[in-house]
Length: 113
Image (cartoon, rainbow, N blue to C red; front, side, top):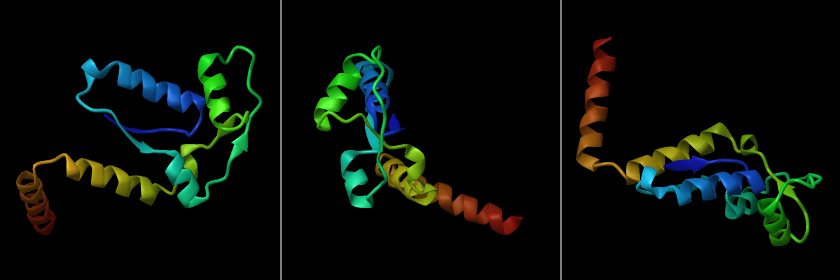
């Protein structure tokens, strides 16, 4: 499973849920948004009021961020960057020969059109 989600407590919870259900997926890979990407890209941070019913994930998340409920939406990442992240992750997990053959076949089909 290749995962991209918001950099916030809910995004972390979703990712953790996938990881716990590993029987459904051979591998769970967090492509975006990671703390490193937030820092590298200087993404804008929103601080939200935590709800009293938010639970353990928000408490742990806020503890990691100095008491702030940090939230960064995935949509702050340019679509081209997300496309490149997914393409690289998919290519790294594909049979290179089969991928080359599929691309060659697609090129021939485009020429035929």
